[in-house]
Image 1 (spheres, one colour):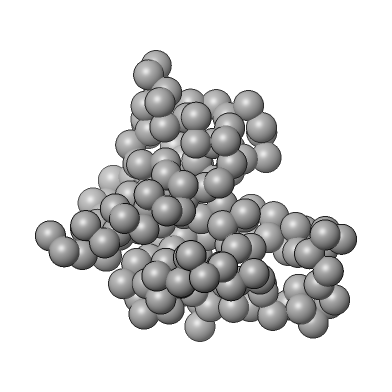
Image 2 (cartoon, rainbow, N blue to C red; image 1 turned 90 degrees about the vertical axis):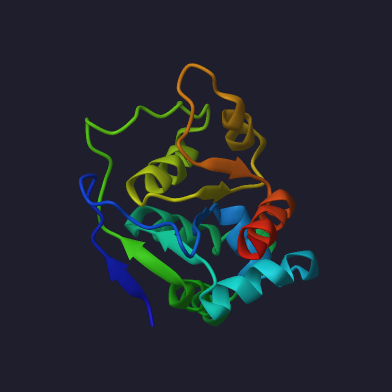
Length: 164
């Protein structure tokens, strides 16, 4: 069952369990390809050890991407991927506000929504395979208040988090 929460910038949000945003490539790795290397991340999602955040924009992006020919998904397969992911997410309805920290701009405007969701949802990390997104982890003039990591590094960070 999908969870929904309202997050506002003036409400302190606890960070336990860790709050994550997954870009669409990572979602496809997990929910379509069932990538064995990401099995620990999938287990964390399914067990509730982490909170995975999504919003209307990121869910619409997933619905669109599952229709790409290279994924070879028929309508039932597309719905299966979408429903499985949606069952693991907490839907964030809040958006960024002017009083929030400014974010770096991603060179690909389609990826900016993941940064904005991470900020609005008070995420601890954005997990991505996209090189343009990963480059933003080094942004000096507008550093993100959350980590931006590839899945392998994110899983290591989550392991350390739960061992602490």
